[in-house]
Image 1 (cartoon, rainbow, N blue to C red):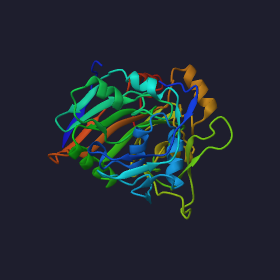
Image 2: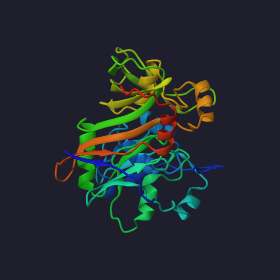
Image 3: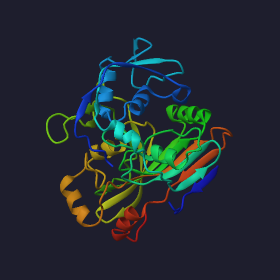
Length: 340
């Protein structure tokens, strides 16, 4: 297996002040979008429309593919006609189109004719949407105007740093996404949690359910919770946990996900009474305030290692992104001499 460890390399939210009504429209799927999930296709086509609204119109059946209802994970193919109901678009969409995303390269972990693996920094979305005018993929496209094809293979939360794969060919995209769907990849994260994680607790097998937050500051935002095994809306979710190191009042964990559910690691760890340090959705909010004063300005979750087969050669690869400086420095300040 080829093992690749990244090193240092050189190297917004969009305000929405008003809304304008849009009309129902039909979108025809082109070759560049063939094989994409319906939700990803719509998020790219409906710039500025909140993710929560996109998922809502899919669930309600208002989105039609070739005149039939479709789920968020339906794969669209060349020639498919996707009907989208009237949605409200930001007034500044045209302005955003006239001002493309700033060109930006990201630290490269691996690149060849088929794929590009980058070390995504925290605070950068992987793509535009939900109030974010651009992300990694839009910036890469601007930085590489000669690239004929650049598509995200998978996603990372905005506040999660680490290994991110981008396909440079349609064949690479479909091949890699098949590996992700078939759970043939190995995705391991580094997470710092509050408290002493019990070393014998190595598997979390709890169903998760996505929902929209109700009244309050987070109203309308996507959230996830653990549900009972007999809950019909629960999706089986499996997380493997290994204690890497005790760091004072914290534990550094190596977390491998066998299923790729939304916010899976965050919710699973919090459900065991050990939330991720700095997690503003599922964490200990009072502790987070204290951690900010100590220098931890974001969630301590990093996509550290990704194992997969090369889409063209089938060679086993293991990419590693080093712990970012801010997380590494915070961990070192709390380090104990004993390694577990």
